[in-house]
Length: 306
Image (cartoon, rainbow, N blue to C red; front, top):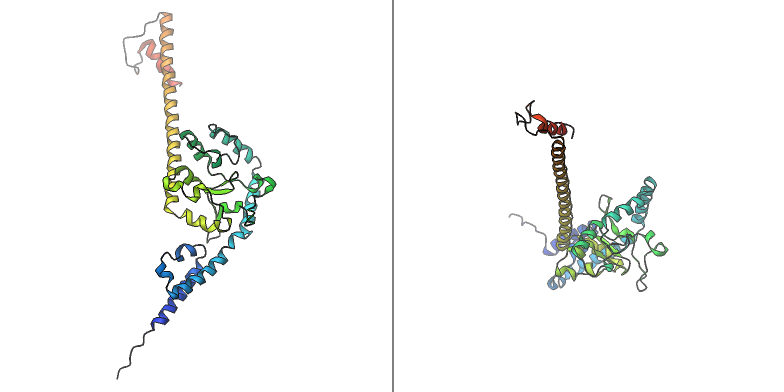
């Protein structure tokens, strides 16, 4: 009599799958909420998933403590101090460059010039300057008492470390889109504010986000959203189109100036020959001919040295 094949029971298979999901959740800290948050009431009612969700919430509670670490702050301060030592006059050059870029703005050129609290309405000219200036990103040294204002309810405050994120390779990258409003004590998305559609304008990333405890997780989710990607692409395309347009306009102006100078030179030659009573034309009218006479000979001489 042949032996019966043995199969794992359904309970064992479910337990095995549950352990695999937990291992995957622990290995992917920052994305745990993004991929394991239930969106269906049906899923929430399954006993196995309830247990899984509770364990994942414990992992997220541990992960929420990560932004409070001083590791990123210390590394950022080290980088800033190194840059200051290598180029102590960098701040002065930056101020001069900003003055040439932002003449259109009504407010003094400071680190908070692009703070959205200054501009309830954005014109086309103002939009161009705000795109060039970039996000409003003050640091502790720009604040009174070298610290951001404390929230009296949560006893938390904003930190310049939120401008940066460390990836799995321990490389620090900067959020070019994150802006902090000193006047409103909130963070917002610079591309969202300038290029978001009507639906985006109602987002908390335009009106302002101030939940400092969950800012790191919310920023990761936001910068991976389709709406943010569209706004970011729109900002880049706008900046590049204005840059190309400025280059074409400059090149056109140079060409106009060049031909005006040439025309003025031709008039001067004509006036000079007329004043001397000399003939313009000769026996040959080809400028490459050795006997092309006075007018063409003078033009050929001037062309050789200009």
